[in-house]
Amino acid sequence: MTEHPLEAMPPAYWQGIQEFNQQQFYACHDTLEAIWMESLEPEKTFYQGLLQIAVALYHLGNHNLRGAIILLGEGTNRLRRYPDDFGGINLDRLRQEARSLQSSLQSQFIQEPKSEVTHPTDQTHDQLAWILPTIEVWSAEGLSAEGLSAEGLSAEGLPAAEQPEHQS
Image (cartoon, rainbow, N blue to C red; front, top):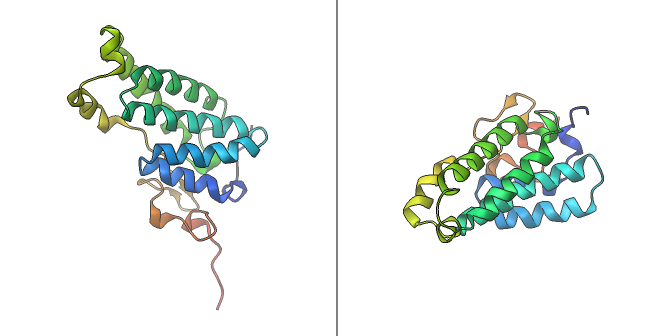
């Protein structure tokens, strides 16, 4: 599989990345699901993997740890076949962070009674907040360490660094 040019990604994709990084996981799911349903391979499975990770994080926020663990696994599994920079993002880092979160959740809660697996205490949930994955975006200048912020999107939906300069 070859690397995927940023220009080939639809504006809704960049919106979904932005929503993901702003921890608006339900909105991210809706955005990515809409383009996933209309897409063909190889993008279809890529979008599905991203939205599964977003839904996993949504489940985590709602204390559904079993759902989070399952979807983190399914999402990272779908994304494993793609190159590390597919879709203009640091996919390798996202996969690593999602697997790390899944492993932390499994090791911390797998031995707990079932009621605690699906309903952890607020204190336990707060301790996990720092390990949520983010999506770093590649640009012409390289990797954006902050990921994609609200200011990072142009009107056309591409990262601002990817927009052609206008000649005056």
